[in-house]
Image 1 (cartoon, rainbow, N blue to C red):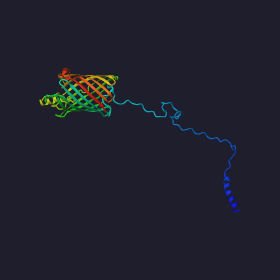
Image 2: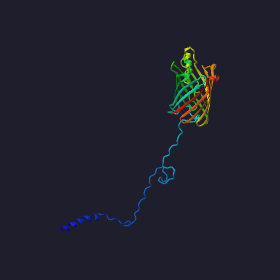
Image 3: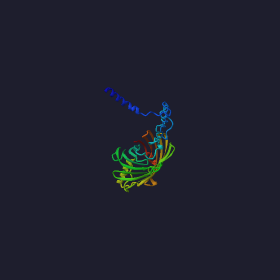
Image 4: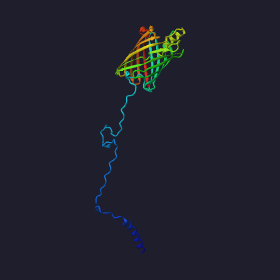
Length: 316
């Protein structure tokens, strides 16, 4: 009897929730009728999207339409072509140059070092040092090395693509002498094969009346001027120079330059000198120039002023 009572109680607990469930309303069609569902909303798209399927297969080499487009490359660097080179170096670019000029009669080997640096695309600073000369100075009776004592600092500003005013301050260490040289280098280009150049140094003058205007190109000339001080000989106050020429691009890496100069020492035509030079420049690598120059410093003294110059310029 007890077992029957327990069993009946459990059966009542199970059946009560089932009886409490709501019987569905069959008034809309009864059991088994179809239920209409709303369409899924379309996927969100950006305004720039297209109807193309980004996952669709593409041919080999076909660009991905969803990939970002890189901007076109810009031409940079310093040109190999001499005609196309600007008058100043690009910003943050340095150039080191070593010159060796040989005069056969009388024998004289002059060595000079120059460096320049592009501060900006327009502003350039430079330094120079006359390392010395191998010649007979008449004091030791033989050809010997004479250490240079001349240095220079200069500044160039690219005012226009065709002209860059330049100021240089040459100095001699012992005895001390200082001067000023002004110029306006120009380059008029005609296409990529021809250019007119010149006027790197137009006027130079000394600051000290009893001294001289030094140069880093020739230690022999500096020594002659120093000796003249001991003889109380007055050195020229300066000079006026017109030096110009043309550059012809034989090949993209090979340029030929011819130049003619006219210099008035002491600003007078009484001791004027004409100069003639020919230069060949080969650029085997983008950052390296090999340069050869031959010519005369004075056409009226061609035998004594003929020279051959070799130079190496490296940009870093």
